[in-house]
Length: 252
Ligand code: BV8
Image: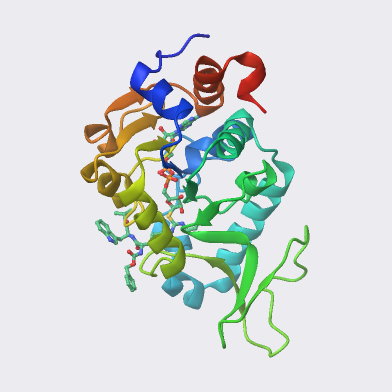
């Protein structure tokens, strides 16, 4: 299967040592079998996003929200990183200044070997006490009776960012600073509908970065992209790295 050819500008930037920023969304985990949010068969299909991913929904019906997130944890645990996750980790190893900003909460980037990652929307793999906000990592397959409770008796919630909640200041700040310095931005597998994450590639474009969108569909971010590679990330990304570095070298 051949994909749109990467431009010589993209290949030069990949081979160079200029700062690189990657922004990913649910689409990069699609080929690991994890449903996206808004595509056909997407997680939100049949659900109002607000019915499952807002503090109000959790206050109103913590059990239903937890059933949704326990299901997401089980799916993510059973999934494996795909060639796109691995290609981004390989690119990080070859890059100087590099940051991966992900909207995903599935943890697959870290499992693929990515290290310089900020999780803009939190993670399924940490729980937060509703009373004092303390957080702890929790990788258990089975959370026990839902909704889980803290030792203090208060409800535990997933440490993810729900609609109407602020993004973690440190994560979002790092992403915006990286956007202002980046000379190359790869925008992979995101519908570009959720803010303020979707503003990150816009900030980079305004600072003169070359913005490449990798997505089978066009999105609102296509308008600010300098280059679009239309296709599935697990096919397109490895092909781009091979074009830049050669088949052997690409996956080092
Ligand atoms: C906030 C929870 C303020 C975790 C999520 C400005 C303008 C407009 C609206 C707003 C705005 N500012 C704030 C808002 C409101 C809201 C928002 O953006 N609403 C949108 C929907 C209109 N934003 C917020 O509420 C944010 N908070 O701004 O708070 C504030 C400030 C200070 C103090 C207090 C408050 C919080 C946003 C985070 C919400 N939480 N999820 C979870 O359950 O995962 S959002 C949810 O959508 C996920 O996190 C997901 O990552 C995110 C984005 O979706 P995508 O990742 O893009 O996935 P999607 O399915 O949409 O698209 C998949 C794409 O992949 C598609 O394009 C498809 O074509 C492509 N694809 C498919 N297969 C492949 C592929 N690509 C490549 N390869 C493939 N094989």
